[in-house]
Image 1 (cartoon, helix red, strand yellow):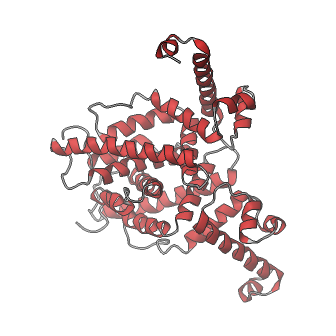
Image 2 (cartoon, rainbow over the protein chains, first blue to last red):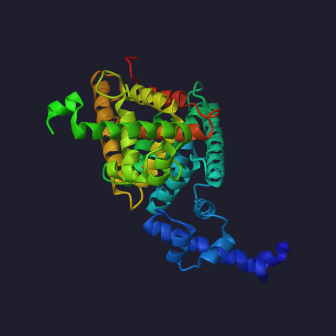
Image 3 (cartoon, chains in turn blue, orange):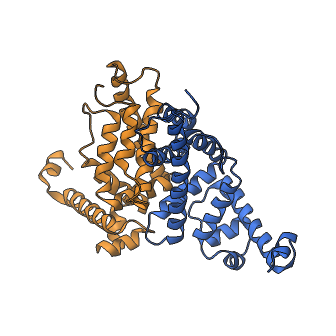
Length: 200
Length: 200
């Protein structure tokens, strides 16, 4: 396949890419609506009206489909990519987006739990790499904050980055279970006292 | 059944309690060793040498067994119960204990992820109640810190309690996936700057 045929959206490969994408979009809609409980490739196929054989053609496993769905969701996340914002602000923005689609908070929790189990190498690699990449990104933002004097110099940037990610992940879980008692944004904003995003 | 026969450990009920307890202990050992991946009541029975029928006699579902295992683990947690320690210190001590048994960190992650799905009412109730109880306990400790002037008065105790729990939960997940990069204790200790446990 040439880059040209891909860009032009022609040929069997481009059709396959489009169909794969369409399946991921259907899966996102399904997850957003009803979560991901016990979802096998087969039950998910039933839910989105795609045969099990077709699904198997595009995705090697349930894990692979879940990962692709989450990745597609993250790609459209405006909190993504480098910009000038601080670590807490960026995770708060990201959590805002996730909360609009509770099914994806559930999907992320499922991927994270799967990642800790022995038989889910694909989920483990995906979540491990995501954590490592986000820690690195946030640690860089924290170092910038230290360089500009906003953040205390004796805070380890990687320790603090892991803390911000953990807080954001954990708060979303608590919020899903008790939306009237847990306010993700308010709790996360406490971390700004530790890691000021803006000049104080 | 009288309290006396229970206390004396006699009679069929007491035998049943002992057997149930023994199954939970075997399950803890199994989880500590190999995690909880895809564990159905049947596969767990195979692993600990208990017939599926026996397991069904003592536990209504896989979820119920997982909850009982986690509860048994928590009951022996010396971080449990009221004492004079601060919110961050108590969650740090609790996380220390969990990290000694990685299978239980996995079990907890599984329970939390299940709790977010539609078809796991037992896990949802257990995790929701656990979060609510721990938030209340930690918020009380934070209020005490505010009363004694250690903690800033303008911090909402419940927001801060949710933050500390989230940080502890999320850090344990990151640590399991990258034990050389993530230090739960060091990251959590950053929260002491926000919520000092001891007089500063």
